[in-house]
Image (cartoon, rainbow, N blue to C red; front, side, top):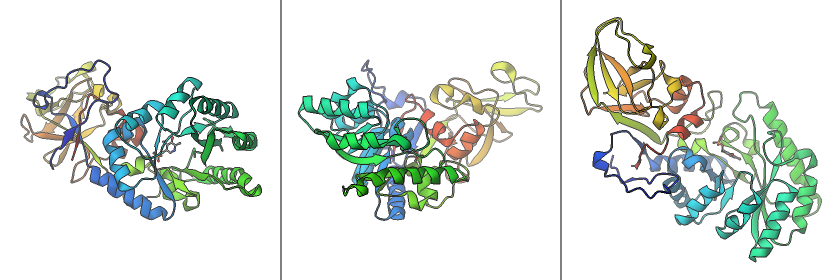
Length: 390
Ligand SMILES: *Cc1c(COP(=O)(O)O)cnc(C)c1O
């Protein structure tokens, strides 16, 4: 594998710190295989047939690096990009990404002019917000692109399915707004039991019937996240919104694995210290682990300050020379200690934290160590860790 670039920090540092020569960095880094993301995108597009694909790339593309991933998926033919926040959209526009971008989150009135200036599609989640968008568009002398958000049982943002009509009606009278889509979001599409998700889909379809009932063209309807993509073919509608599946990771342990995808990210470091420890000598903060025999320990320069979660203390494993070893004692801010038994490892030897070829450590497994979900594992790997694209 050849490293072709190291990404800039995200968000860009307001201090404009000078970049540090790669040669002096500690060896901890994340490697992202962009061709795998393209492959996963193609598997998903093949699976959904005529439905379009919105690549959901919030939170720094689930830790994979927003700009390189967005450019890769734009080139692969993704119809749209979905993000959480306005600033993520601005960053992509400034980087030259021109595919339509929907900001999925709630908006504040003062932000609307920036949405319009950067040609970002807005989520209208109430009548008030829609009217504010219409006004701002009139003032700016542009047409606003909008998707209407319907809450069908998540209780986060959007008008309730049982009182959605005023929003849809208001959107018909707005002079400066193009309603290009209408959407909702599942609370339980990755679960074994799809009862609630099916009910949400029914509610959504009942709301969108508004258009056919009036002989109007229905805007693009979308509701399917990765869980629904995998388990509910009937929820594909006009467009699907995969996030985590693009990165080759499944949304939950229960979900049906109906599409073949490959993890795109691996997290690696190297041994920086070797020692032999006596039995009965506690290791690390709190002295939570003690060997009962003479053993060899190596220290690896990664810690919870990078997103290698402290909650994994006593659970995590790493791979050295293709073999798994336990992380012992507490995970520190910048270092962990690994028990290699009576095997050998030298300063500079590679340590795989996540990913790897044989017996890979997957995000789902790491999530289990920290008692969390794979989403948090990926988005927690923070900007102190350089991203290298291969
Ligand atoms: C995050 C998100 C998605 C993607 O979810 P995955 O489970 O990662 O596929 C889709 N839609 C909305 C509104 C989201 O917030």
